[in-house]
Length: 268
Image 1 (cartoon, one colour):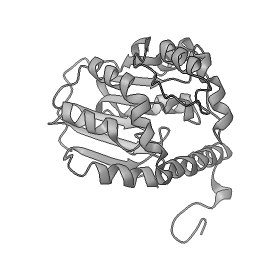
Image 2: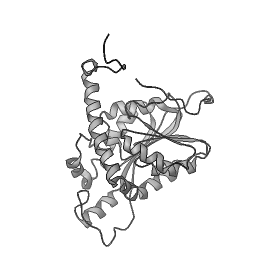
Image 3: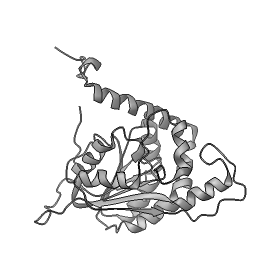
Image 4: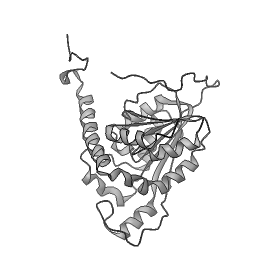
């Protein structure tokens, strides 16, 4: 017999590359759980809502869309999406159990929203399912962006669209110092590098764009580790968030109807 009595693999049986990913994700889980319990995660909506709402307007959402959000904070964006797709479903995955608990508690009135534990590199869902895939400020945390993008391609429906939004990217120098405050490796890549990544994974019509934040910086702005001066915050907002969009090629024949609303794929 190998492994533990409960069926888990002994650490020595896990390939080194997977061990590295699990260690990376554990560090992030600890960080985001701290955000959840300290109340810091509530600030995410304030910071990201101005550009996220512009993005949602671009998503051409249908009432029956099946939407996946990778990394959802306290679920604020998922709740916005649920209103746009009342006959569909919004599924959020996240590494942090405290965030999952907080999102579930705050979304109790949303009948079509589900939050589950999961990693971008091992999404606990059936293939070819989601008509829209969204990620807000999480892509640069992925241990292997290449693996994550391939996994997104797997779970996206044929003809489904992907929307990846981030402020930490090579062309925005006002975010580069963020890496000093993250206890795990994060990826600083250019717009062209992200575009190539999605193209190589099989997505078509891959494009990049910027979404600026035109919200005035408050008069009582206080510098912090994210923006060290008022001028830096204004310059950061002007650079805007990087948006990567793409589409999984459509099938030559109409997509068959999905008979199971929530086909969870159990991962051991």
